[in-house]
Amino acid sequence: MSQTHIKTEWIEITAEDGKTFKAYQALPHKGKGPGILLIQEIFGVNGHIRGVAEQYAMDGYSVIAPDVFWREAPGVELGYDGDDWKAAVAHKQALDYPTVISDLRASTPGHCAQARCARADRLGGYCMGGVLSYLCALDAGGRCAVCYYAGGITEYLDRAGELAVPAQFHFGAEDDHIPLEHVEQTRNAFAANRDVEVHLYDGAEHGFNCWSRASYHHRPQRWPMGAR
Image (cartoon, rainbow, N blue to C red; front, side, top):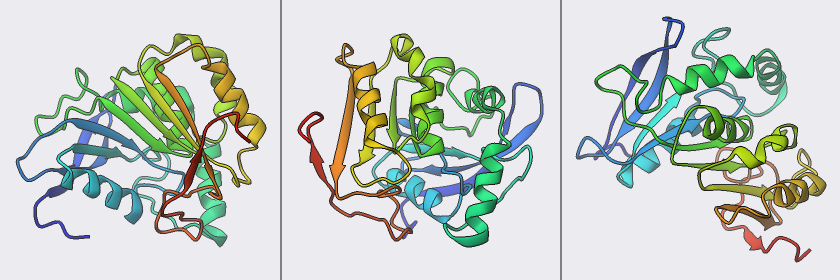
């Protein structure tokens, strides 16, 4: 992906406990724009996540993609199969979510102390990052959240009534990691909230938005919830 009109770099962010960690930052050609906090899948801030950040920077956004695994495996980048998949799952299982939310909060406006840090107040993430985007919307601030195939989201739906910002949830109808029952539970949990959208895409599997995966679905067809 061309970076001709954008600026990318790894920056350091100071966590709430005073330690520092790295985040990949992509800025538009004019140097600043509306901010996005982009939260990784279980595979680290790998080439795909950096590519997504660059893609949004080309569209005029300032994007920060923090290294979520920095406390145990800083800088880890993994693929999607075999031993890399096993390692990714192990890294996720070792996470302490309250600590992760604290770290992500350090990347949001009003908390990020670094002068070069983009003012990332729009939250977005994939799989694990989708769940973390939702939790950040509850506990770390932000003006909206977009959550792609947020596996495990049902564990946190008891807090649905606390969500005070607009949000979107995107699921694949053929996702073998997220049962349609969980999609329906998510829809029901936010049924009374007009600022929350739940989308289901026909023929789409888990990871359908990642062009680096075999499950990539370029133009999935959205089904209105309840139509299936």
